Image 1 (tube, rainbow, N blue to C red):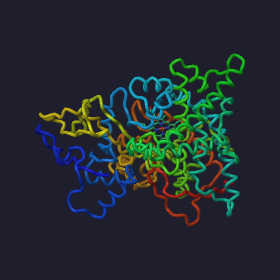
Image 2 (tube, protein in one colour; image 1 turned 90 degrees about the horizontal axis):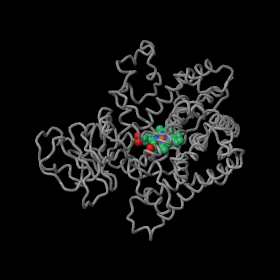
Image 3 (cartoon, rainbow, N blue to C red; image 1 turned 120 degrees about the vertical axis):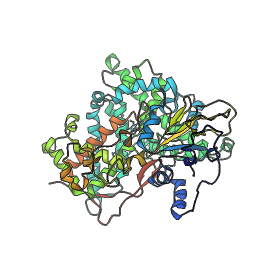
Image 4 (spheres, helix red, strand yellow; image 1 turned 30 degrees about the vertical axis):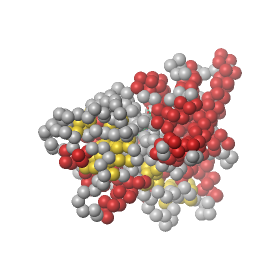
Length: 553
Ligand code: HEM
């Protein structure tokens, strides 16, 4: 990855021709003495584009805004909440995260609808306006709770089985992998409907015998995400010579095929019911009966919701494994609770007080568990599953800090995406061709910023509880311990293009964590090392998280 400081242009008030240091694709970026740390950043960048290493170190080096290059993409990195807010305020009516030309090409090849991730402009907005009321209105999402609870029941059964099977009768190895199955199941379940009938569409990930279609879907998620890299970076002519494009197409065929089969089966069930079935509240029925979505759009929307927010950010996915954002967050939360006895005891006490006798929590109960919500927030702050997000701005000019980013001007252009960076005072000489500007919003750097969060590397859920008495944490009594800029914590993105699954994901995580706390004391495996995060598009644990689950008395 090449990095270009924006520094030289920062305070040039004079209009002038383009600044040489900011021309597209100049060469080696590092200026001044090259220390080991700098070399390390450059090497890390090859695999760790969006991690703390890249974001935090580059922010330290270049300030809150700088430019970098990844493959054919040139990015303008924005790493402080004030500037992230400036980008979002100018993102326009129909924001675009990033172009996914290879997803689009596949859908054109098969004559499929584009869907949420690929569509843009009013077409994207139309699909969002159908999904938003069902997925983001709290009352609607609460109505999915009973069905998510049934998945949590399965999760508890599964954990108990794994625990008993282990040599010490307590350790569940590679928790994230188990929770991924949970997340997958719940992600499929919840958007697909809210009734007991929907229950029949469950894919059975938590059963001993995982159904063939489920395995096919999981394998296809892995393949599609892994192959995205090769497909987007290699030239088109290489497709006839290399196997990647064909396998990418096959992976999408499988993903779409499984989703289509589920939708068709549900439609057949509904048709067989007196009166055509369906009813208030059923999500899939709602989608199918909506005259605002074509059948093809329902298929692709269900496919994308089943992907559950995986790889929502960039086309250049580099997954070795598919990870669900919810299962990933839950694993980190349990990892920290296992190492922080006071935090775990406090959470257990809260859950016990609100739901005595291990009564399964409802959404009304969850509303009375502020510490539970604080634990999940703190986990997402430390490990924003999506560590960096994109905004591709073409239609408007944007001014961020002192920098002016002109809107796209059509013409002959060599690169696919390339920002033109100028001081906010417009230069007198303009180039005739300008491409879109791809802003990279550095979620990770923002939520680890010491100016926003005291002791940013520590797991301190209490920082989210405003009513907490600072005196009880005298070392945390710094002003601002409880306050931060709203854009310093945006794990679900922000604005009209923010995560459509946010409320559902939160509910899944709250229901699962509260139930686990009712039943178990969680401990780290004896002698287990600290686990660091690594980036595989999503921020995931760098090694398996093995935890001991001891039944509570
Ligand atoms: C902890 C869990 C999750 C996290 C942290 C997360 C994070 C994100 C982020 C950062 C974005 C980009 C938002 C933006 O550009 O401003 C996004 C988009 C999206 N997410 Fe999630 N997500 C999660 C769970 C889910 C789930 C469970 C679903 C599905 C049920 C989902 C479906 C989507 C979809 C469809 C989009 C694209 C929306 C659009 O382009 O209009 N996400 N998510």
